[in-house]
Amino acid sequence: MLSTVLDSVLAVLLVCKAATSQYSINQCSWKGSGLTHNAHSRDIEQVYLRCSEGSLEWLYPTGALRVNLRTNTATASYKDLTVCIKPFKDSKGANIYLEKVGNLKLLVSEEDHIPNKVYCFSVDQGALFIQATPQMDISRKITGFQYELFKDRTAANLHNSPASCRPCNDTELLIAACTSDLVVRGSIRLVSHDLQQEESTIDIFADKIYRQKSKTFQPIGKSGKWLGHIKTLLHCGVKEGEGDFLFIGSMHFGEVHLGCAPRYKDFKRIYKDARDKGENPCELSTD
Image (tube, rainbow, N blue to C red; front, side):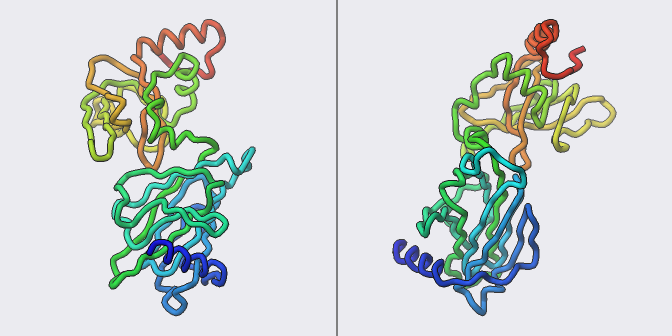
């Protein structure tokens, strides 16, 4: 039955015309309605996104979308780009495929997708092809996801590779402290684990915010402290512990994911040694 559906879709690919533009489109995000397909439900809408991150939201999905992703900056090799998508929690109404030279490979099933799971693939594996599934009632169906593009497999490793749990070496630590989306000094308040999502959440009391890309950490009254949390992989085995740490993380899909987390006293020593040698990549206050 699946092969019959795929053959039908591929036939449509050969004869379809581009559908009319949807009601909301820009270079980073797209939002549209499948209701425009009612008069010609076999049309395939071509969607072009030209940012390193954004979202797609398809209300009342009917017909199909072909999503063409590119970055808005020059890259050494387009084929080296990695795409990661994170479907909305209640995404329904369509299956998501990778389409290349008329061949379809199922990436996200409407019925079986796991909430909060991130799906990564190389752009040379194909474009995203979103096909609406037959529905008796489309009135409450919305298919959507966030996406991010990377020049390497960083995001895929973040979510799928045990290597992301290893401690940073001194050089990696110094560079991460100077370039990461989040750098804070603080202590662990609580660690909670989500077995289904295979991730842990670290609640942190921060004494100093060196950098944060978004308002992940919020001030606690007039105490001078900040409260926030960072995600990490469950198999990293993070536990509650006393003492101060330097928490370093990167932002993905609106959440901060843990990178390096040395004890603060160890970071101070490493930073001082590098500064004495003139090898520190940036200036940080360690008083």
